[in-house]
Every structure is written in C-alpha cells, then in structure tokens.
Image 1: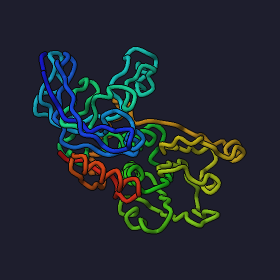
Image 2 (image 1 turned 180 degrees about the horizontal axis):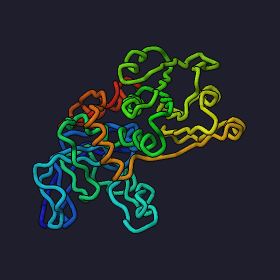
Image 3 (image 1 turned 60 degrees about the horizontal axis):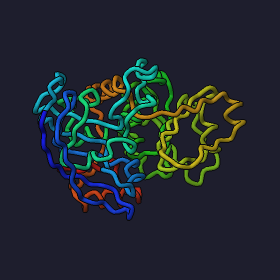
Image 4 (image 1 turned 135 degrees about the vertical axis):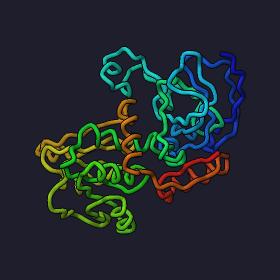
Length: 332
C-alpha cells in the first residue's frame, strides 16, 4: 500500500543532545499498521542511547491511522501501544514456546528499526507486535506500562504466587509499579528505599511493610521474603539485602547497568538462591498485564512533558537527577 509519509522524529546525538529530524515511509506492508503517536514514556534505557544516532523512545501509544491489507486485528481509530520488541522469527524454539523476547533473530529497541521510535509524530509497526489499550486506561498512563509495567509484571506473573512475600528494592519508575502489581496479586509486599521519604506513598501503593536502608548495616524485617525485585537505578549492596531473602528464594535484578553483577558467592550457594534475569513480557503475558492493570486500576504516577526537543531534554535531565515521580510521559 502506498503511504508516502513524512514524519517528525527526535533522535539521540553523539553530543548527548536531542535532535529534531524527519523520516519517510514510502509504503505500508500488508502486515503493518500506521500510528499517529499521542504519548510516549521515558525509560531509563533511553538515557543509554541518547548519544546514539537513532530515534529514541520505546513506550509508545497512539491512534491507528491506516492498516495493511492483511491486518484484521486493528482498524483506524483504535488505540494501540508498543514496547521493546518489534519483531521475531516466529519459528525458533523460543518463539514457539511463547518466549519470543529471547529469539536470536529478535528486532528490539536499540538494535533494529533505528529510524523509528516513540519520540516521534508517527510510527509504522508490524500488527502482531502492537497491543490494544483497554478503555479504562488513559493513553498517558498506558505508555509507561509498555515497558516499565511489562518489566515488573513479567517475573511476578511467571514465578510468584499470591501467598508469597515479595520484596521491592527502590521506589521509582519500576518499583512503584511492582508494588502495585504484587499487592493486587495478593502478595505481602515489603518495600525498601534509601530513606523514609517515600514511606507513606509506598504504603498507599500497596506495600505492607517499609524499610529504609541508608546507613543500615543489618536489616531486621521479621519473616524473610521469597522474592526480591531490584529496581534501583544502580546495583544495591548485596551484603545488606541477601540475608533478607528466604533460602531457595529468588532475586530479580531488573536494573539496567553496564556493571558486572557481582554477588557474594557463599551467600548465594549456601542459601540456594536463584538469580533470575529477565526482560519485558512476551506478547501473551503483556496482554494479560494490560488486562490485569485495567481490572485493578493499576496506573503509573506520571509527570507530563511536551513532545519537543526542550520537553524531552527537560524530562531526561530530571530523570538523571532522580527527580521524576515516577515516570515521565511525552505528550504530543
């Protein structure tokens, strides 16, 4: 289908500054959907690419404008969103088992489709990698769910039971959503933050207990946690946290860091702890995440910024200083 679309994009640059540019799409493939973007979440991962020559943003939500000739899952006027994964082979063992996030031929943000992103006026994506937005979730709230919500929901949905005790380290963009999801799943939620500043807010979000960690050499929390979800901007003090994990418990380091993941070996071996890596949800779980969020009224706490060079740079500067409460959303 002929498209002949010129669109606006906001890219990274080797200087670290945001650059306004343009893109062009000649055609719309049979399995593709054209979206007019309305909202885009800012993720910590975007900061890692702000010096790269690529369009930024991977928490996108918009309105469908056109669909390819073979698309029957979306129509013009539908709201849709997308996240980290753009495509996969569909036939390897990982894809066939519903784990397409680990497909060796996956097309993901930062590695593929560098001419497109959520910080833009429009985007064209394959229909199977788009998600319908439930009516009860506003578009501004839906954007951070595309990555942040999906990232924390994935280990909770995959490994956690409602009778488990879940620790969440860090009450920020990921952590404040992890608390909500775990609480609504029926879990006891133990929140850890550097200070007491977010204690009351953590309790309102669903935490049953709260512990400040700054200056503490030993944490006394009573019964230990079965699962510990790490959502801090940098890797934590493992010697402080490992003793609060139940033997044979699991730790999920969701922090995006270029540092080596170094833990005290005997503490892990002696307690039979599992260190479980992960990414945002595969598509099937992502759909369930959106349904669950809609049913239970789970929404991110957001700050809105205009979709412009100044707006994106203001949001990124505030995020870098740790001042966003708790997710920045660009609004067209």
